[in-house]
Image (cartoon, rainbow, N blue to C red):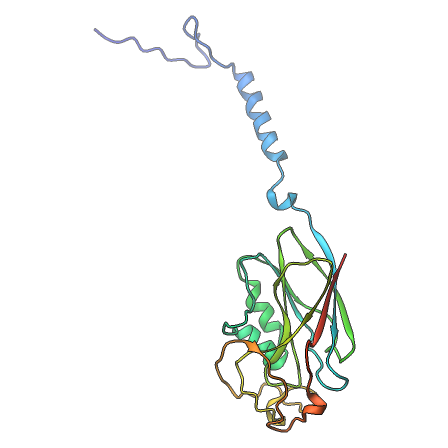
Length: 236
C-alpha cells in the first residue's frame, strides 16, 4: 500500500481543516519584522556621551619642570596605559624620555577597548601655567594621562584609568624605569639641556620618582620639586 503524501503549495488547495498563512499575510508579517529590526538602535548608539572640561595645572616651582603636552587616552575599565610596578611600554617610554606623544598615541590607538587618544594642543606647560581640553566619554569609561617632566631623564606624571568625576586630583612624579637618571646635560631633552633622543637605557618597573638627586649637571634647588607636580580638574 502506498502512503498518501499531502503537498501544499501557494497554487493548490490545502487539506480541509489545515491552517496555512496566505501569501499576502506572510509578506506583510515579514515586512513588519524587518521594519522593526531596522528601527532598533544599536547599544553603542543608545549610550549617552558626556563631555568633560579637563584642566591640568603645573605645580612645580618656577623655572624647574615644564610638562610636555599630555597624551590623553579614553578607554574601557579593562585597559591600562601604564601602572606602577609594571614595565613601561615603548609608547609610554617615548613620552617619559622625550615627550614623544605621537608614538604613544599610535601604540594605544590599535588596542581593543581604547575609544580615543590624542595630545592636548599647545606648547609644554610651564610651571604655574595650565592647559584645558575636552574629553568625551561613555558610561564606565576611564581616562589615562601621561606627560613628561622635561628636565629629567624619564620622569613623568599623569593618571592611570581614572574614572571622570567633578573635582580635582593632584598627581605625583613617576620614574618610567627605562633610562638611567644620570641628570647630565647630554641626556636630557628639556630647555635645561636640549639633547633629545639620547639614551642611557635601563629596565626597571615604573615607580615613584625620587626627584632631582644632584648626581649630574642639574641643581636640585633649580630643577627639583617636592610633593605633587600637577593638578588635574574635571568639570562639566
